[in-house]
Structures are given as C-alpha cells and as structure tokens.
Length: 354
Image (tube, rainbow, N blue to C red; front, top):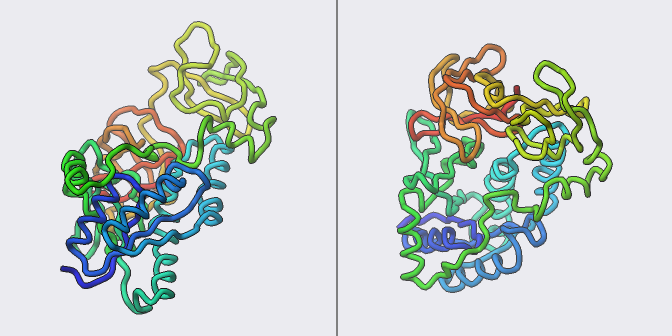
C-alpha cells in the first residue's frame, strides 16, 4: 500500500472508474478530480460529472471539480482557431494534455487539497488517469511507453507531458486490455454504458468551420480563392481554404480526377491539389521539439505522423533545425504531431512543419 497521495482524473467513463478502483486498492490516499474546461463538452458535461461524482462516492474517496475554462480557452481553443487560420490542422487533445491535464491541472488540484487540509504543502502529489499507456525508468530518465493493448494505446496523445511531471504520473490501465477493464467494471457494478469518448475535438459539436466562424467571422471562412496544381497552374476555385484538409478528395469540384488536397496556403488563400502519386512526402521538419531524454544528433527510429496512422521508419537529423526523413512517402499534415518511437518507448516528437 503506497502511503502517498494520488489524484485520479475522473471522466465518468469506464476507464477512469476502473483506474480509480485499482488505485484505491494500492494507495492509502486517493482523490477524485475533474477539470471543467468547456460548457457542455464531451468531457465535462453534466452527465459525465455526475457519473464521476457518484463513482467517487461509491469508492468513498473525496471528489473535486477544478474550473479551468479560461485557461483551456487561452491555451487550447485560441490555438486551435489560430492554427486553422494559418492553414494547419492542429491536434487540440495533444495540446490539452500538455498545458491543461498534465500542466496547470495538477498545480490547481494541489492548491485545493492543501486548502482543504487533505495534504501538506511540501508533499508530492501524484496524478493518475485512465489512459492506456505505461512509463519506463531508464538511465535516470522517465519515458512514456505504449499501452499493452495495441488497440487502445494512447501514447501519441501524451507525448508532450513534461519530463519533470511524468515521474509523478501513474497509469493503472497501461498493462491491461480493454476487455479486462470492462470485466472489472461489470463485476464492481460501475456503469459500462458508453459516454461519448473525446476521440475528436471535445469542445466542438458539428463542423469545425462553423465553430471557427464564431471567432473570426463568416466571410473569413468562406472567402473563395484559387485551386492550383503542384506546378502553380490554376485548375479551379475553392470555397475558403479552411474548409479543406490535407489528403481530402471529396468536395474539390475538379474535372479529370481524382485530385487530392496537397497543401493549404493561408497567406494567399490558395488550395494546392495533386494527383495521388504526387501527394506523399518523405521529409518534413519539427517545431517545438520535445524529448523525454537526450537523443543523438542523427539516429534511426520510427515515427507516427497522425494519431491513427501506422509507424514509419525514419532518420532524424539535428542540423540547426530538426528534420525527419521517412523511408517511404507519406501524407504529411502541418500542425499535426510527429511522435518518435524506439519500439514501444516514446522518445518524444514535435509539431509538423513542411
């Protein structure tokens, strides 16, 4: 039995409920916490928060809700809108995990617990979630590892947890399969009916462009412009570059297809279209690089360029900036994250820039 104090992020779903139950078996002091980040969102609407509260009551652990609406708007929502305006396709879940869930949230939780006299100011607070990932302590560094269940592994989404925070993180489900988690939930009487999981952008219902239009104005979203091929030859007209994503085939309205969206040039309101065999790239750069431990100037690894994409063998080069050379062409989307793996260990990654 661990005598420290640990706070478990509660979503109201099966995963966090089982994680809380397992922690109660292993830790002397367990606290349930949820962050309130967006009114009515998939992760903190009334249903999810009520479920989380009830689970904590059933487990006889305290439960608190921390309001981080302003911080979430500033660090995640504003960045999401700004990235789309630049012609990028951001991943707000990655950014939320970095700045909110494993960034500001633990500090705010500790303030509440100290204020409630549930822990001392000098105590270390450990944080847990129901994510399917693991950690590995090696050569004095704590690294993230893939979850045991390959169908549920969420290491891509968590690659930007700070190296200082990661040693204080616990992931009780990392060694488990989803089927095991559901079985425990059924045995313990936890609700197993699905609450909508935030696989997509949790704060948006409907089209992204409709949401962005509320921030930047309808005209900005739907300003028509040119579609050009990769040589710069005009081949059509689009209905606003923010209505398209890299790799998109439908909705271009071009003859002699198929055509795919290859690039979005926000500065000139231009959509670049390409044939399928022209779409892939084998090199890109990393902005905002993030590593869990020091890496060589040049090394071989594997990289995942989207959450659901397979890993691609690559060569990573530090030459004033960080370049990634793929061993095969792949559709690359600026604004998404490239996460670098050594087998099942996450070395780090960064935000894709062409």
